[in-house]
Image (cartoon, rainbow over all chains, first blue to last red; front, side, top):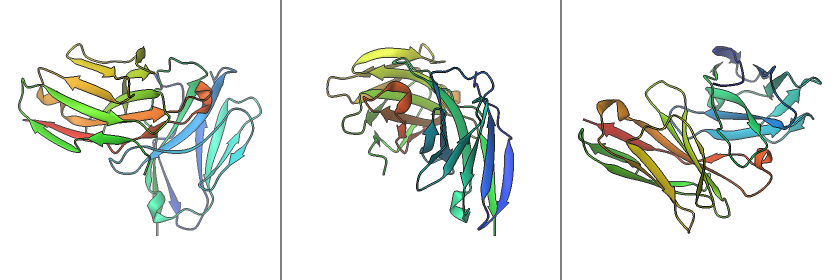
Length: 111
Length: 115
């Protein structure tokens, strides 16, 4: 079973910041938080990941709470092309990884 | 382009048949993962290989098998196909770096239709 909880759907206006929450209250110390997205039946795309510090790259920012029990993915200026299903997953530091995806959040960007 | 190549892109076959899906990982990646995604469903983890060895198994049916070859490409074999096996099959690879700190990179999938 997935170890994360995400809202099933969200929407955001184009040009605004999209903030996608994820709860991972049972996360352990050696587990990373990863975000991926899947645009309509394409292969999932890696977005960002982190362990305990906040992270930023050209696509998004990841804010992880101090207790690591939740995180937020921020798309700073959402465009219509950001419409996708966003998956938050936790990945253990191990060579044998059942990397399990949950249901994700379906993000709709409105013009 | 993720660097992960899956062939064929589309496959149509009849019930009872056997098919082989192929995946070439990104250059340098040692781990390969297979996922199944049925229509409007989530990604179901099937199996993981690392450098030729099976390392983790998910809900993979006994009719399905996989292997990773010395050149690191992987094949997923599906036999005695049923209508319910119709799905997108994705392959992903990850690098040799520290396990949790290595993203998955997915191919564009093989769409299997069983008629």
